[in-house]
Length: 558
Image (cartoon, rainbow, N blue to C red; front, side, top):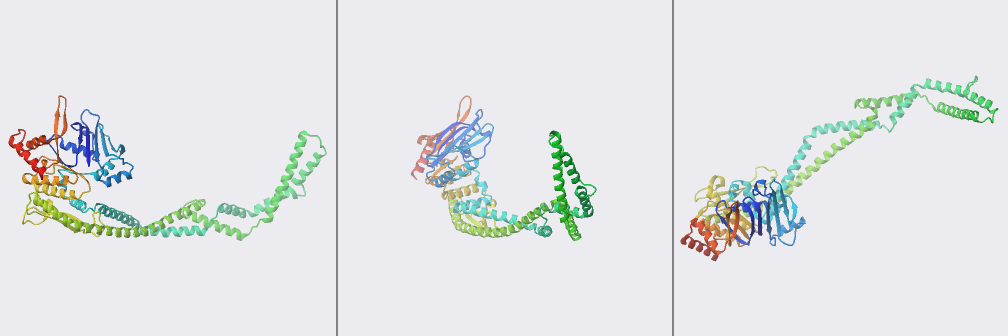
């Protein structure tokens, strides 16, 4: 439960420290004194949005801190433990808003995002606002309240998630399927093109070798003539050749051996030249011995090269790029094959998600059907007590028109009401007046709060539009809720305030420079005076004081 609330420089609140107890705490004060400001500040600690306008004029920041005892909230303790935010003492939520509009949140001293404050806040406190009855006009609210009463929120979230997954999978499957004809045509083309390239089986460096060999065969006669002429000049000519000339030159110089210097160097160079010419002659002879000017080989080379060049022209690339193209086509074909496999996989997933959805949605429908009758009966009973004798309340579960998985489940939930005897049951928006809607809303909130696992409930002027004996019944209902946990109730009705286990009085404190909000915890005499003021206005009379004392005494004795 909420044990402490500290507010600094928020709106017209300069400094406020408030200790809170279990049971029902009535909160009253004049209009504009700042009752709702306290709850707005608490809302910031629970993850509500904020802006720089909430900072007290002249201050650099607003600082709000709320301390909670989580002894009876195992879900909240588990939530903190999962995130390493737990400690041994109370759980402290803090929110700081600067005058520039920046906001920072903290859980037990550790910085945290706003979403974490909100998630934890939903586990430890439940705030019912004075405008909450407006949301009763929406069927989404009807479904949420029924699920809360049935304790099926987790199951409802599973159904919602299953429907979302089914829809996402179906959309992806439709996307792939819509490309089916185009993909099949592309798959056929790629398979044919890839088969051509695979049949070509172009080896590494094969094109270069083929071109060189073809060039050699195309110039075979000229090449052979040139080789023979070179051999003749180097070693075979009777009229004189290079080798014989080199040998004769070496012999002539050898006769003058021992001269040293340049003559020896010239002899060495001539000897080296002789060796290289002899090696060149050997290579030429080997070439001539192995050279085969086979016309069939030449025809094969021409046909092979023509196949390669034709395929390259077909794809509008250079022949040297054929290997890269083959790899590219292979990868694209593999991608299309993966899409085919993905389509099969998605179809299986879609069927699995639908089975899972149907299973969970059927469970949810059973819980809703069982809870709808109980909730309707309980709300109808409270309506009688809240000044609507003969009023009837019913919860209609209507099957969804579409057979596709829906995030809300298998049925639509709608609250139907008959405010007066003899009138047919109709939707809330078509039947209830403002005052009736407020009472119906209060009845639903009181009933659903009894099944809530959240121990702290806040009611912000939910009794608007209610008076007389009905107001006393409202106070008794809220006091009953307070006996099982903690209830904070902002009210203008003395009948409600008198039912509180304790009473907080919100008032304005004025000095020469500024006005601020203060909160006092009233003792018995102060409480009687405040309720008398609520009954009779500013001037207190003995009659109003006596009436107030009787109201408080009767409430405490009940």
